[in-house]
Image (cartoon, rainbow over all chains, first blue to last red; front, top):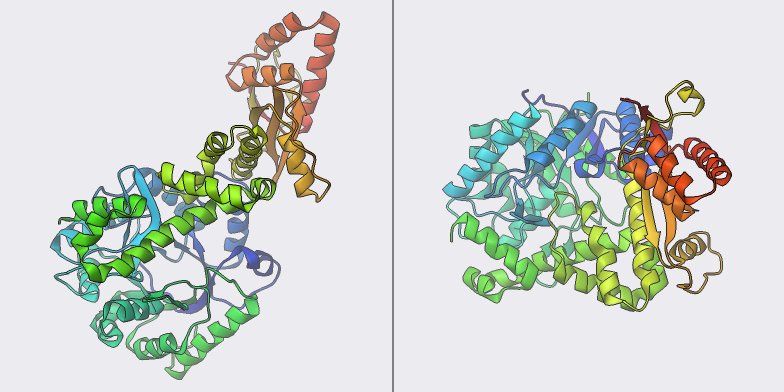
Length: 276
Length: 250
C-alpha cells in the first residue's frame, strides 16, 4: 500500500491529555501515538486508542523497529505492529533511521548508524521486510545524533537513496536536523536542501536542551526560534505534509501545545499551505 | 569495523563502558558516547521507578537506587518493549535485601498488577449462563489477567496502606504461605487474599483440570459438608468477580 500524502496539523497524544481529546473536540487534524505503548494485549490503553481513533485520524510512530540492526528486524514485533495497524488504519506508520537492538540486547535508544554502502544494504533489506509484513510502506525519521562516524555518504543522501530503493517516505524531524547539525558540524540548510521534497510526508517540530558539550534531543521544551527558522526554510519546497508538535517530557497544558501548533499553521498559511 | 562489529562494540559500551570501543572511535566521539550511555541507564532507571512506586515508597530512595544500579548492571534488556524490563526486579530485590522479604514481595505484587492492567480483554461470564453444563467434565477458563501469588509477608497490606494513604503497618513475616489472587475486572485491577485450598483449586483449573477433579481434591482435604459449602462459595465468587471467562466440556 503506497503512502498517501496528508496535509494537516497535529499533536503527539500523551496520557496527560487523554480526557481532553476524548471529551472535547481538540482542533487538530490528526494525533500521533507511540506504537509500542499500545502494542499490549488489552486493557485501558487499547480502549483509549480505539476511542481516540473514532474521533481523530491517527499516526503510529514507533521506536523499536531497529531498522538498522545487522541482525534483521524482529518478526514477533512486526506481527504485533501489524495487528495494531490493521485495527487503527493509521495515516502513516513510522519509525527511525537508527538501530536499537542486537541479538539478546535491546538498548531502547535510537543509536546512530554510519552512512555507507553496507548500512544501506542492511537498512534497505530491513525496510523491505518491514513493509512486506505490514503490507504498506513506512516513513522513517532522521534521529538526533551525538556522534559522527566516518561515513561515505551524507545523512540526507543516505535517506534519499533509501527512499528510492524501498519506496519508504521521510518523517523529517526539523529539531533533529538542528541538533545533529550543531553536534556533528554540518549545515542544517544544506541538509534540508539536499532532500527530495517528494520524499517528505510528515514533519516533527520539537525542542531540545543544551548539555555540557552537546545539544540533547530532550523534547521537553517549546520549539525554539532556530527550529522555526528551519521549518520556514523547508516548508515552501514541500508538497502536502503533516506537521506535528512533539513533546515527550515536561508535558505542558494542551492549550500551550495548541498555541505552538497555531504558530506552525500561521507559518504554513503565509506560504499558502493552510490545512484543508 | 563493519556494522556488526560496530553494533557489538556499542552494546559493550552501553553495558560496561568498554573503553576499547571508545578508543576505536577516537577522542572526538567520547562526549557523544557518554550521552548515549547516560540515556541508556537513565531510561532503565526511570522505567523501574515508574513500575514500582509503592516499593520505592516503602524501601526509600537509597536502597531503591542501590537495587536499581545492581539491576541495570546485572540484567540486560532483551525484549522489544521497555515495559518488560521491570519483570525481574523483584528477584534483584530478593538478592539485595534478603532480610526484608516484604520488599521483593511488594514488588512482585506491583508487577502482577501491572501485567493484569494490560492483559487480554475477555469479559467474565455469569454462572447463570452455565446452566445445564456437565460440571464434572467442565474446564473453567480463567481470565487472561488472573494470577496467583504465594507470599510470606503482609506486602499487600503495606501496598494498600500506601495506596490509600493510611498508616503503614510494620513488615509482618509471622504468617507464611499467604495466597493472593490478582485479576482485572473491566479496567480495574483487583486482588484478594484466599485460603490456600482455594488457591490450590484455582491452580488446578489454571492447569486445565476439570472441575470434577478439583472437587475430588477439595473433598479429600475437607469434610464432605465443608467441602461442598466451600466449593459453592468459591465458585460463586469466581463468577461474580469476573474471573471465569469461559467453559469447555470437550
